Length: 219
Image 1 (cartoon, rainbow, N blue to C red):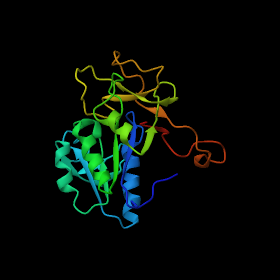
Image 2 (cartoon, rainbow, N blue to C red):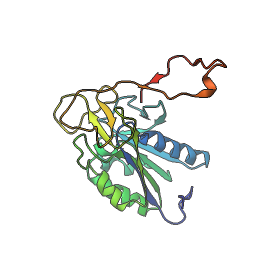
Image 3 (cartoon, rainbow, N blue to C red):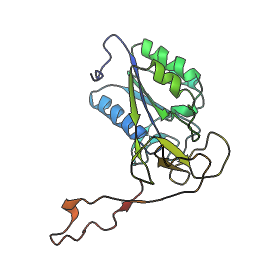
Image 4 (spheres, helix red, strand yellow):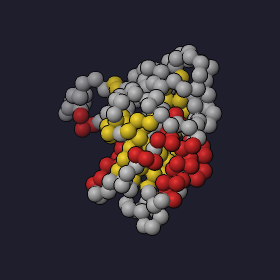
């Protein structure tokens, strides 16, 4: 069963979660874009703490962008919702536990609430309000990345910067995606900064030579 494009006398909460580089923000942006195609009004939020790509937009590692409001705490969200029927909140692990009540109130009011965020911190512990949101959400998607060591599905965020503290906003310079086998929260050494792409036969010449150039790309 898939969510209706419009709430029908009821709202709901969707949570997109997983480790770093698993495509959470890209999926959030995709869902919001589809809602706009359906002529629905939307509003997006992100924590002030996350300014990696832009202070005014939600941004994904793949380059997707979505104009958004920055908030320092969850209590700021309701007054900015306006007449939106779809509310999107990215990097929700950086917000306070009050976010759960805010999302529940918005859903109780008939809105579709889409939340994306890490479920685990770099030590593999439940992160911020995400675990509670997973418990109350109607729809949950657990996204997986690719382990940079072995290529298996990855569900852990490996910190590669030796720095204390749960919160460290970063991307490829601070984290790697790892599977359960190759994740070690006490080892901060990067293993592989670039992964070779698998072959795309349509990009190879008739003689079998690769005509696409460099086949290495960030995970």
